[in-house]
Image (tube, rainbow, N blue to C red; front, side, top):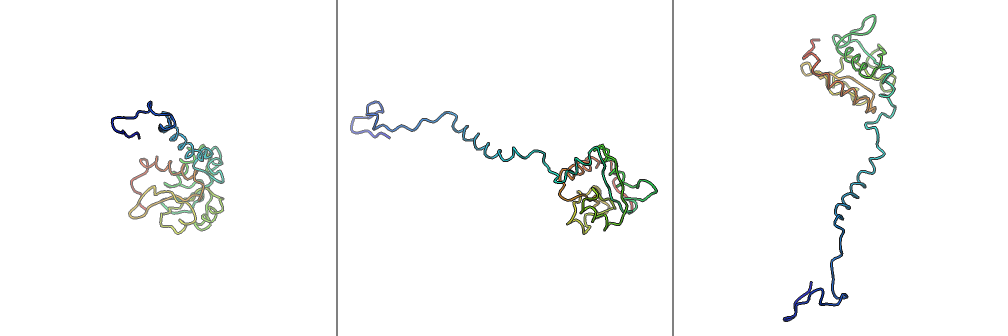
Length: 187
């Protein structure tokens, strides 16, 4: 800043260039450039992140246009064992989900314990057995959000833990089916 001395008021043109301090000229878009560079730095790591959510074992890709392996344990009215394909609301849900993936369903009947162990070993993709969100296996396998509540029981399906794209596809399907599900099922 130039200070006046007596009646003399220095101006940048009246002083030698070596004395005059001018603020450095900034490019009119320097703030935008800085913002753009900051965004690049922030977004750069995401460029290599294609196909979220991920399925480490590619479950969704394998099931799509292929086979959905479903373990079931009879638990009327949710799943009822017949001589052929099981029946009940959960069996119908799984069949409809398979159709959205252009997949056929391969059914495997067993005890809940054996089915959950098969789910952990990734030998089945989904388990249906009239399960609720209070099942002790909820720490070891993935449970869907409750698709139906009966009294205080929240019914869920079980799936392979960590296969996030597959789980998201199943969750989206269940969300879309909410209106089609009966308001309650009497066990």
